[in-house]
Image (cartoon, rainbow, N blue to C red; front, top):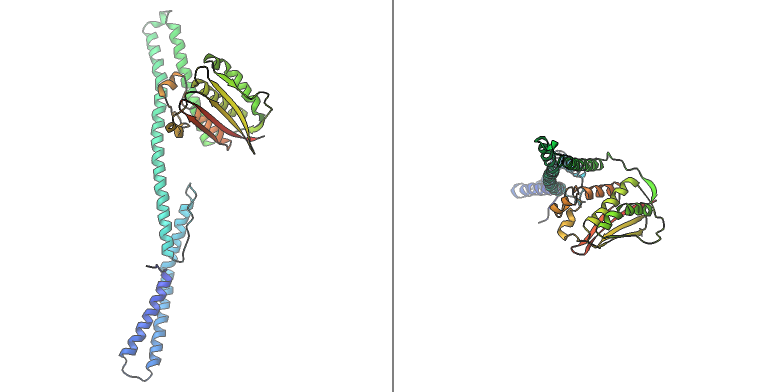
Length: 344
């Protein structure tokens, strides 16, 4: 059934009511004298009366419907997500219905998003408490042992103090990483862009990590005779990104493996790629890899000394440069991280 707008519907009602009144006069008026004049007058009066009612209803109802439509539309425009375009018709009620349904969908999606954020928040708080609890308990154990007489025992006092210091350093590292993520998320940590050679920076990091890589007989390779490639970015923060990715490739690389660094021209940007032939990452872990404290193998990750915040910091730094970072991996084959930087 076709849906008519309130204005059209009222106009149809006006014509019908006027026609019915004129028909009634024609049927029930016994006197033929002036019959057609009276019928015409009745039709005209009825039609004019209905039009007045139409204007009155339009003023009271239709305009309010239109105002409500504009209000709902404004609410939708304030959403974080771009509003879905709606094709309007001449029917104000249909338009209002579509806007309300679209608004309801937006609110439903927002509620689902908030529920997911609440789950992540609870996971995050649980992870923070767990990460800090381990070094705190270690320090407590070492201190209690020293207080119970171990301080006078030269065979354990220095050893336990050194262990306690390592636990303190781990706590400081976790807190520093949390502070860095918080500053990056809120925009407090300002990116200070400069023009620098990404190849030279990469060589510096590779040289610094050469010793750790040699312990697992992992080879770090770069293109031979690489020409300078100038990019625009925060040199200190980009160094953090590179260090984190190369350290991860060494940590989770195979014995006698290889980590390759490559650079690609991508128009206005430079694509930096760091790949390894290590243990790889299962497909179900990839979507959450850049989340704070997300670990694929929690026990092994802690043994390696990571805080679980490195990749989250990497992602925030790259996004603060308005660039992207991606990961591809096949379990048992290796992992490829790639990120873009604006040319300098």
